[in-house]
Length: 477
Image (cartoon, rainbow, N blue to C red; front, side):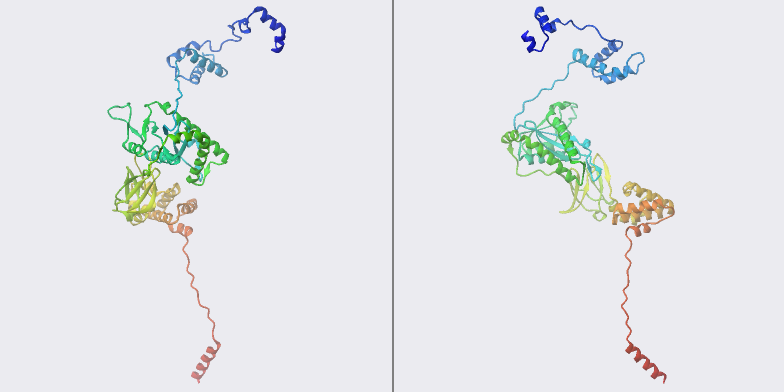
């Protein structure tokens, strides 16, 4: 009975097991009876048949389907029982599931690159939501990573992201891995659905850094699992630091970029030991970097427009007829006349589109106001809904042509001052009854300076006055 005391078991219970010479599990009878009626007994054969025919059916979908049937006998409270039964069926009679095999990585062998959307971070710049992605580079052996903010999965964002990561490392691995992104590969017309071919620009990039390109099989994202997993960890880490920061709003995108770099560097600080092993196996970088833009030479048309990659952009009318040099970056266009940088424009996304700045065309439009009504890019001449309402009001009050001229004068004022200043006055004018003109808006936004003529002070001389009286008396006498 000493053993029973040490095991904290009652002596009678211990004596029963000793006399039976069996373990407790062997003495227990199999539990083959139910303590309550089975709520799924009526529908389970049909459920099992549906799962066999379509294993991809979800338990929630099936439950809602049978719950809607009056003859099923299901209630909302049977949800957990139904989920457990489906899960048990999948484990005992369901199809085989996909197995993921952990891979042994060699140090310094591979750099994986991928993009991940970051809308879920809900970052704002001065109150305006920032829609962006990260070009994310990861070394699978050490989990070292670097993230570069971008606006699309373009080749230029790939170049910028890769060169930023290699610049941080100071060396390059022998292989660069991506998925079948269109920035790196394209589909072969004669073999749709087959392995894709590399783009010439991508091969030039890999050749410059002596990287062997590696891609995954089509439709097999799990083969890119290292960077895919780090995508989730990166956004989770950034989300946590945004909470600690107490605000998701930043003064500028540059401030946000610095925030991301601080977070990523802090994460990489814990990976220095394995990173050192990787760097020891890597090769030095070439002396020069590739340009992170593409160059075009559009000619400015008589409409004061230029076309760059199927997109239309307006420029000042003084450039009509000139051939410009345009550097197309990932997020903007830099416009040059010869070697002089004139201005920068935000880059348009998509296949086609137009970006017309009313400041570039307002002066010519004032000379030809009749062109306003049917102007192809007229929507660009309404900086906001307030300006559109002002145009409609002026046309309704003064007639089509005079109203258009008045609106163009308002637009000219917005070009000289700011859209925000003019919009504030327009809201006041629209709220008031009666007609008004552009000159009234100008007087409130930029009142004309009044010239004050300064008169010299006049101090009469009494001596001169006495002399004048003497002359007058002598003349009378």
